[in-house]
Image (cartoon, rainbow, N blue to C red; front, side, top):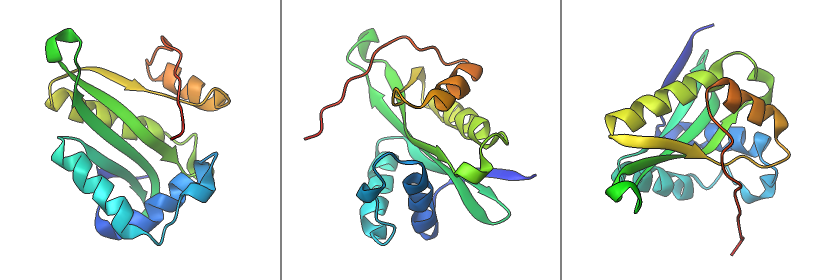
Amino acid sequence: MDVTIRPITRGDVAAASLVIQGGSMAPEGEDEGDVDGYWRAVEETRRRRGDVLVAEVDGEVVGVCQVVIFPHFQHTGGWCCELESMHVRSDRRGEGIGAKLLARAEEIAREQGCYRMQLTSRNVREDAHRFYAANDYVSSHQGFKKIL
């Protein structure tokens, strides 16, 4: 299987949003028809030194990951990388696609001088937690969110 990890294009947006929708615990929040809304997020992420990546197999978008780069107020303003919207289509999980997305995200973080990668994963996503642990991520913090 040939997996291509590359920056998202505007033409990928609907398919990528469907990948997210398929893996989301709140799929009603996604709308593949709102390409402009998603694309604004891509442009802002890129403006801030990050990117949105897609995993492509046989011409189909089967994975997505947003790589957010920001200056951390700790570590003397060092650069930090936050992974968001990490999803692989359910019928393609377990094929190494997620690991390839993570590896490319880590390359981007290193290229941007980041000292740390971080992400959150919902407590109920035990398969995802095993995946991250298998890729050398450590469960070191408890995360909290508040919907506004």
